[in-house]
Image 1 (cartoon, rainbow, N blue to C red):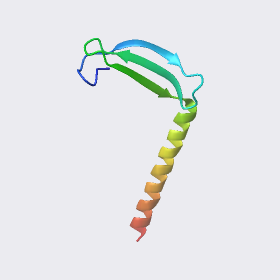
Image 2 (image 1 turned 90 degrees about the vertical axis):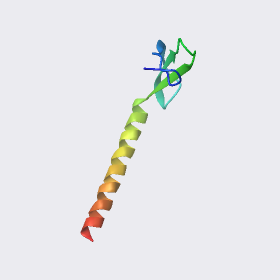
Image 3 (image 1 turned 60 degrees about the vertical axis):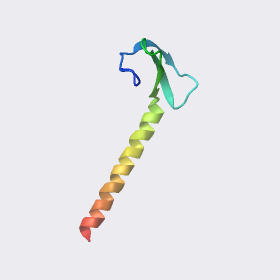
Amino acid sequence: MNCWHCGTELIWGGDHDMEDDEDYSIVTNLSCPECHSFVEVYYPSERTLKEIDREYKNKNEYKKSKRKKKNDN
């Protein structure tokens, strides 16, 4: 992964479990050796991934039903 600011490849600093967080399970920290930016990347928990998947499916079902109604008219 490259730095957003200068484009230099980021250095991986480590992963940490997010035991007390319901939304995210892991945070990864990265740093830029060139401009010294610091980046944290949060990976969603299983619960959050299921919620996102459910919302995505519901949104797609809504779009399909809307198109069907439009085509029926």
